[in-house]
Length: 299
Image (cartoon, rainbow, N blue to C red; front, top):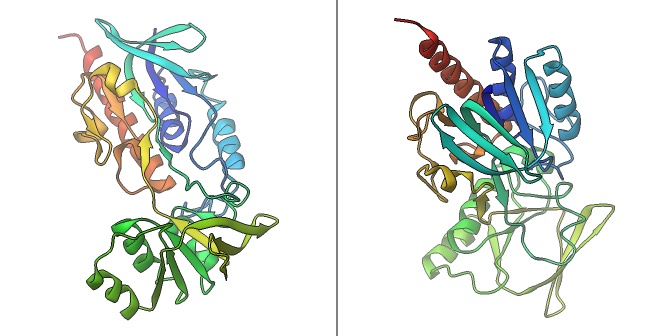
C-alpha cells in the first residue's frame, strides 16, 4: 500500500513526487515514457532551465529524486484505475496491481499533429504548436501558421508579436467571414486556402510549403493550432467530471470531485507551460500531504 500513486512522470508528476518524498510519503510514479514534448529540441520558459533538452531535464529530475528512498519509479502504463474502501487500485497493462490511499493523475494531453507529408522530420525543430515555448527563436523570420477558422486567425495575431511576416494556411476553405479576412489583411497577415501537398525542409529545418497547384512559398518555421486530447481514460473509469475543452474541474490544491483523487498539469487545460505544470504538481502534493496528515490524527 502506497500513500500516493502518481500516474504520469512529466514535470507535474515529478514535481509532486519531489514534495511528497520530502514529506516522507511512500510514492509510486508510473510513467509510460511518452512525454508531450518528446520531439522538442529544447524546453523553454522554465526559469533556470531555459533551453534545456527535455530528455536531459527528465534525467536531472530523476537524479534529484534518487535520494528520496520513499519514492519509486515504474516504467509502465496504467490501464485501469478503481476506487476501493482503502483508496485506489491501479492496474498496469502487464497485469500488475498496486494500491494507494491517494491518486494523482498527471497524464497530460496528446496533440493532433497536422497530417502534412514531410512534417514528422520537422516537428519539434522548426514546426511547433506553442509560441510561448518556441517563437522567440523564430523572431523576425518567415512564419507559417496552420489552423482552421478562429484557431488559425487567433494564432496568427499572437505570432505578430514575434514577426511581421505571417502566412496563414488553412489547407482548404478557411471558414472565415469577409470581415475576418479583411481583419487579417489590415494586420499584414496573408491568407492562403490552397490544399497543402508537402512541407519541405533540410536537416529538420523548414524551407518551403508546397501546395497541390504547384505553388511553393518560402517559410522558416511553422506553428499550428489544432485539437489536443486528454491522454488518459482513467478519468472516465473513476467517474471524474471533465470536458475535452475545459479539462478536469478541480477545487483547492487541484482536488477533484472524486474523494482522494487529484490532478495536475495539462490535464487541467490551463496555461500549457512546463513551469505551470510543475507548479500545479507542487500544489497537488501540498493538498495530498495535508489530507494525509489530517487523516492520521487520532481524535
